[in-house]
Length: 141
Image (cartoon, rainbow, N blue to C red; front, side):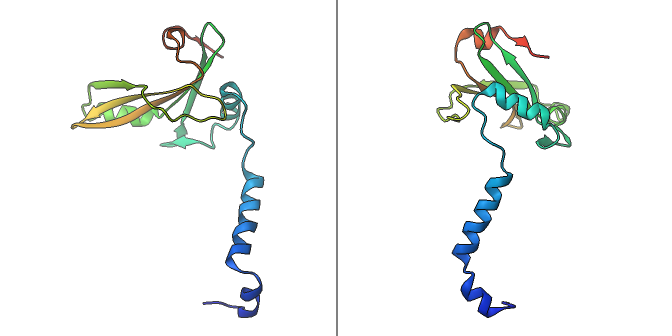
């Protein structure tokens, strides 16, 4: 039902769509230039991105070459799946699609297997694919 048909002809859907897009852009945060900047943003806005009322962003780790990786997981989801009886863990880092901004080289995902279904539980965006990025990390407090 159109309440004001005269106004509706002047203010068309394409015009409204453009206006809404402009307003949305003003509320979106600026894209960070590095994973470290993204981690700092997420650390500051921890309640904005949650899963099961808990922070989804977990931490940032840095390898010996100074390359950053950021970890996302929902501890409550992991706990629930383990309590259901899942005891098989798989890891996968074969994804070819990663964000170009902030620059990322690898997406590493850990999955729990429950009733023959793979459930992703941990996501790690990585700046490096080197062995150091996987084996040595220093927690950033």
